[in-house]
Amino acid sequence: MIYTICGKCGDKIKVGTKCERCTKEAYRQYKHYRKDKREQQFYANNQWKTLSEIIKRRYLGMCLNCWDKGIIEMCTTTHHIIELKEDWNRRLDKDNLIPLCTRCHQKIHNEYKNNKAIEQARLRDILKKYKETYKL
View (tube, rainbow, N blue to C red):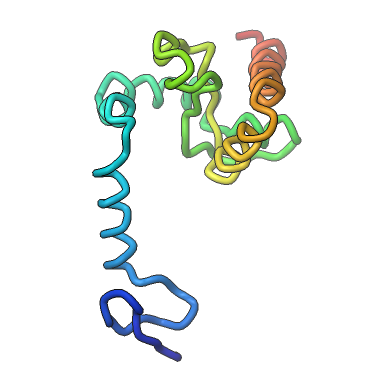
């Protein structure tokens, strides 16, 4: 195994990897200076955690974006179609939540930067299609 030295802290790390200690510290700093404290608190509360699990179970633990493409992938995240910063009142609206895998969640947030309204409509269509297919 080939090693190198972390440029920030000087720890020995494997070539091609990031320093675990510096990555954790960078994330801690990122969280500390974020401006969306209300959203962070919301995602940490039990009401959200419970609802997120209910949504994942409602859709059988599947990523609905993958399901729409004919792929079965386990979901890891419950995504707000209309984001909290857009409409705080829809934060617990079950019709505004869709279960996604990590890969799809990242892709969708990237799409939001370019075509948010189109992507949101597409996600609502996926929810509708699933509900019609399984008569929910």
